[in-house]
Every structure is written in C-alpha cells, then in structure tokens.
Length: 149
Image (cartoon, rainbow, N blue to C red; front, side, top):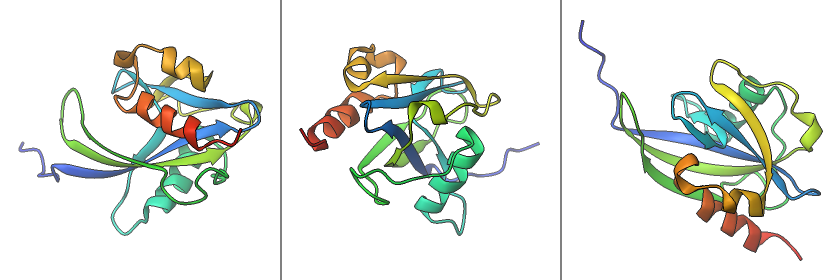
C-alpha cells in the first residue's frame, strides 16, 4: 500500500515551559527524535499556532498554557529544521514561552516522552548540542538576553 502524500514542510508550535522565579526550563526526552526538546506539535488544519500550544500543553504535560512575561502569547523564536529518522521532512517551528512552576508539571505523555527534566539556562548551555534540539542553545541565549536583571 502506498503511503499518503504529506507536505514536505510542516508548521510546528513548540512551547518552552519556564519557571521564571527559578530560571529553569522544562525539556522532554522525545522518543521518536531521540533528543531533549521543548514540548509541542504540528499545527493541525484550521488550527492557529497558539491553539496548538494550548491543545498540546494539555495533552503532553497536563497543564494549562500560560503565556510568559517574556513574550506573552506571541512566538519568541522561529526555526527551520530538517527532521531525523523515518519520514524526514522540514519543520518550521514557532517557539512560545510559557510560565509554570517546577512543581506544577507532575505527569506527561509517556507514549511520546521517556522523561522530563528541568534545567537552569546555564545547564541547558552546558548540555552537548547533539543531545538537544539543534536550535536549543541559540534559543537559550536569546532567552537569557531577554530576561530582566
């Protein structure tokens, strides 16, 4: 059976959950990608990118999406990435920043992620690039520059 044709380019809404008081962000160990990534997912037909954030946040982390003071409900970062593995395609990703306290994320989608972890921004920068989304270090530096203090 022939696989259905799919677009070569996919629009993705990523969301980085940030505990603004502690200066830590949440990464997920994505089973298919084999990398530590922000949460998120493909924007569905007839769905806006922010609506994707709200839906995926509930599905993947079981919390409500609360925009951070850093960017509000607007994308903070934009990337274009060639995916790895089977079904390779290009993801155009809008990165949103959400606010949540470290203790508020108590469960996650175990089918999609093998683990989650909170890291300080300097800990993210210390992680080897090959273990993270390829744009994670650049995102983290931009986030550090945008924070007051």
